[in-house]
Image (tube, rainbow, N blue to C red; front, side, top):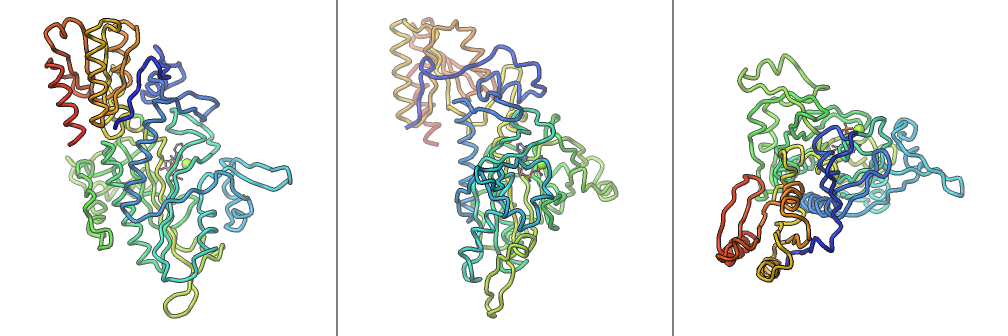
Length: 446
Ligand code: ATP
Ligand code: MG
């Protein structure tokens, strides 16, 4: 069963104009399409339509993490400052950290990331190499008091992140864990209809020596990137990879081609890329993976007993995905003058069922029939049963960007027909009601 909705009973506050401070198209469209509302700088309420997309994106991320062998838990948003004092990051993290004091004058903070908490959980329970490898992840709100929150959810202060943490006995195993995440990321972003390119990256304040950012190309992106064109076109490996096998060749296929963010850019190496394959572009960072070895396990004493009976620090990596940022990135990559064009996998509903004349007996009956049949077939239908004029309904349907529109009006119905429009291609066709229902139902089964 799809989760259907009658627009007359929904909460979809669309706007004619975007507020003037929304500078990039994804931010404008998210506000206009009633997906989000700003409550404070960089802090958003997720309105019902936006929440549906957020949940879909989150679910794809979750499924691909699970497939790669990571295990989900949920850590708190509020963390103890003492854990960060142990790792040495409490002072170092700086003004991006939102520091809080409770009634007992204990120092807390709203987590900007969770290396310390997950390491604390790990060391409490895991004592033997036999319990490795282990990869724990959560999808949880983070807070970073960004100097310049902007571009809507793209650079928020409160934002939803998937963060995974791998624990291994040695560096070789940790690299295998890193490779699993690398491949999982390629699959994750491809499922959302995105071309996300892995780029060699700086490890920044997190530390460590192996890191990649996954970047979606878009003119409005904050990152300057240099890469080989073939890397953009290369598809994802797909779900059938052997997760317990050697993934290094698959990773090497990508890392053999030049790709680097501005910070890591090596102009000489880039010059060696054939001239017609050089791509200097802008992009949006949607994911970031790190291997950092013993950076946290050493100060926080996260140790396991190895096969030889000797205790060693575990080798760790961390793997972030900007779940809420992804909505902005998807819209930057997929929109037109009319509004958003959601890829099917993340669309909040599968189709807009547009009744051009509510109150007309034939139109109402045909719409109710389609609504019930498509819902039963597993399609999520947003039924526009409102009294708005046809022009307004068409504009709203284009703006919110559901993959299909089914348009039911008295003229067509007199001949037994309805119209179907594909949002992405703009193609329209007219066909008997029963055929359209059957066609759209079959798409759900496929
Ligand atoms: P950036 O360079 O954009 O500040 P970062 O290197 O600080 O990113 P990480 O610490 O690696 O980011 O966080 C993991 C992911 O979380 C990033 O790849 C990004 O997609 C997302 N992310 C980071 N900061 C924000 C933010 N302020 N708003 C929304 N998403 C964010
Ligand atoms: Mg940052």
